Image (cartoon, rainbow, N blue to C red):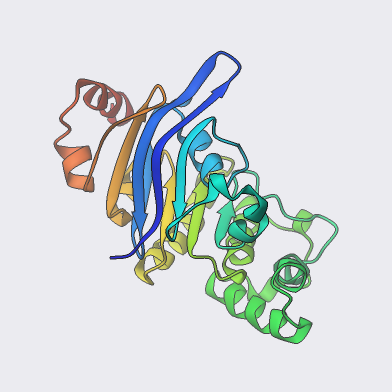
Length: 244
C-alpha cells in the first residue's frame, strides 16, 4: 500500500512545554488510523501538526515523497489534500449548508459553480443532509452541523480525512449519527486519521490504533493488539480507566 503521510521524528513545544517528542508513524492509502490517549497526551496537537495548523519544531512530514516542512511555501496547496473535521464544526454561520460546501471548491480548487454544486449535493446526500441545503448552521443540531462539516471536507476530494474528536462537542444522542457517517467513509475505503475517545468505534473501524501518552507513541498495532492485548503498563492503565 502506498504511504500517503509519513511522520518522522516530529517534535512540538509550546514554550518550555514539550507536547510531542520524537513521534514516528505513517498513514497508508485506504487505512483508518486512530489516535487514542488521555487528554493532554498530544493527540490533537499531532493532528494539527499534520495539517500545519501548528508548526512543528523539528522532524519531517513526508507527503507523497516530499518533506512538507522544507517546502512551507506550498502549505495552502498541501492543505487542499487534507480534509479537516474539527470538534466545533467551524461552519460559516452566514452561509447556507450548500454554500458552506461550495465556497472552498470554487475559491481553492477553481471549480465552476455548477460543478461545485453537483459535488456538494452528492456529498450532502452521502451524509444524509441533502434536505437541508438552504438551511443555515444556527438552524441545525450539533450532529447535523458535524455531518455538514464532514460533507464540506469531502467536497475537496482530499487524500486524507483528519478528524479531531468530531463527537466531543455533541450531545450523546447525536454521537451515533456522526459515527455512522464515519463508519460509511471507512467502509468506502477513505484514508482517515482520527482522534477520538469513542473506544468501541475505534475498535470496529480502525486498521491501526496508536496509543499516545505524554507526547510519545507508547504502542501501536491492530485494534485487537492494542485494546485487547496491550504490551505496555501505560496502555493497560489507560484502558482500565477508560473501560472501568
